[in-house]
Length: 415
Image 1 (cartoon, rainbow, N blue to C red):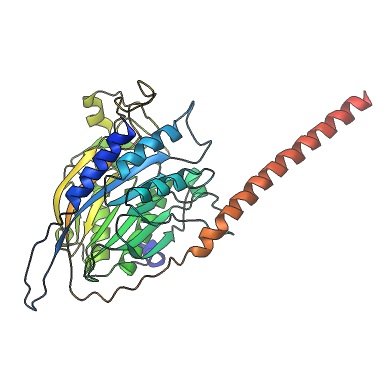
Image 2 (cartoon, helix red, strand yellow):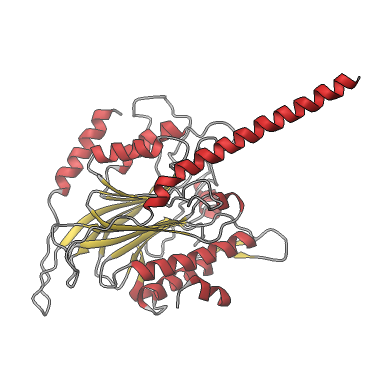
């Protein structure tokens, strides 16, 4: 029912200070929150305290930046220290291509207990995409299995990236009954009609992927940068620019929740199937505009034009409870060693979503079976593809240069 092909007819400081903070958090975390809930069959449910971070970290490939520098390497150092304070981390725009930043993050995370990860979506050798999808899951707990899905459509510069979904089933405790399905995505950017239509097709694929891969009785979360604003309705009038109207909850957001609800429960009953960890607050997550790292707008302007495009959902039916959830602005801390002040006020152009969840164990889960990611071939081949693309581009530039030089020599030789 939710297959996208069928849907289209009807319709992504000090090092010590951080070490001390991390050690303290880990000590606190060792005390699992255990609660017994005896069911009719005598099954004992154990609640596990899990800290989750969802964040578009705005670490694009080298050379992709606005005018001037966007300080990727400096920001990465600060971002890493925030990331390791959590148990499960969902990142967007953490691109692997062209730099060692992803490997640095993975090494740092492993040193601080986040030893497991589900890799980004990588383009296949023959696809038109040349950049990975930039979405990543980090976990303090073992990953039983992981899968990826690359969206069929894309437009503009987004068409060059393998945007899609990453899924991981995470083993929270020693019991095979204590697992959590985790999905993260980053969909098409842009406010125009074409981008909006592409994004909805991607969201339909996302819903289909969730429906196909999650275990119905298993607790599940979905987070990401959806590029769909819950704070403004949008209207299109011909070729004119879209018109945005401030609202309490946009129709686009409601449509998204209905779509996800149908994927989870077969019915658009949103109350039973999907829960936003921030409820209906729809706080701003993209405050000062795309690519802006110095957040200088006054609060009134942020409230008026700021967007809510990042979400963290609980997927039902589930008895997972929300202990605490909030927006983390990711402000740059001038007390940390380094430049004073930083050449930016915030670590990303997006604000993060944090949540502490009580995740129950569930009966009826099979014994542990760890499964490798079926996208291994793409993972191993895409660096070759990127090298081939760069080499081809370099060769083309050299060839064009020699051709122009040849024409100039002939021109002046005939004079």
